[in-house]
Image (cartoon, rainbow, N blue to C red; front, side, top):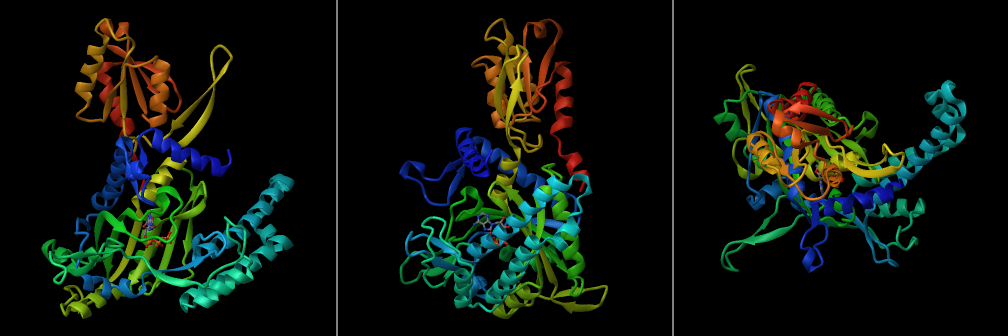
Length: 516
Ligand code: ATP
């Protein structure tokens, strides 16, 4: 299936099965804002819990926080967001569409990378077993030519971004003949800076009201609380503070479903370390976070690191974990070594002490910070895109059938168990209800008696329910049921009393957590 088609299908599947709805749909929608439906909210909660437990349960020295969205406006002055939280925007004069200049350039680089990949795939086919990819990349003239273009583009791009050189960015767009995907023309306006923070007013009278911001990241709430947590939790360095919460950005371009939203959710962890030890911890968290993603079983080939060419004003190292979405490799998580920038800024702007007294070294210093920052919504899209499958099934009578199945990792699935009475009479619904009443304390169960068993299976395949249990006439005599496994579609007959153990073993994330 073409990747573009896949993406369209995902979006409509999410809507049809109660995962994600466009916000304010009855009023024609609000751009780049989405609501999570009855299954979406369950999946989202399960993702958040898996993240939270992998940070706060697994690491004794990582604790949680839930800071407010509204914060003192000076926080955003100190952090640099008021002056520098900008994206470079450019308009195409013919289509009137607006783009981020840096994204247009990155997409151009991805095109060159795509050409190299194509050459490699072709050569792999031609040479078979004997193919040596490294040697091919070092010698093939077409690969070398494209690599040369990538290197030159990367160097110019990094310089223009680092120098905040907007004319330079425009010149790159012109020199590489980047055209508007909608109009196809190269008729561009100048590149301008655009601040991404939303603001509102706090206070009851117009005169007395003060301008405040909706936080564009959750991290600052952690920085301004770090000494509160350190002191009350008697934390020693290194230690981390984890937080999950909403963030808001007035994104210039927002056309990729829940990938780029104006209101979204982040799961962030700030790890406070001794100065000089930040690179060690940066490496640690880089590896750990990659392992976390890969623990979901979506295939290691679908992830890669992308080290930053341009470092944010506060960072001395940064990398993204990218996932292969239907629209290509894109950032799902950022890992940043933020130095002591934020804490020092808050110390300066607040006039309060932000230093930590290290009893082992017998000295005070401002800790350095390594941050891991992942978007819940991008993670949600990762899980949905990796799990969505369309399958052809051979039936016993030789005919074929098809099904759409969300092969979600069982511990993330919204509904763990669906219970069906084979028919609506002979006391079978009562037994089905009895099973649910016993298991509902441990798992999210659903009762379903409508339509044929086959249709009920399909409905739950599409939702991603890992287990369906059917109560039939035999159940009434021997207290056994059939349990059907979503991915293999295999059915087995088991005792009702064993259901809790069988399902429990399969939907627990203990194994995944232990693998980290
Ligand atoms: P991008 O370059 O794609 O705009 P970013 O580098 O600005 O992302 P960060 O500031 O590092 O993103 O934010 C950390 C994480 O928050 C990202 O890895 C992403 O998962 C998530 N995130 C950021 N912006 C958005 C958004 N507009 N919608 C959804 N998730 C987002």
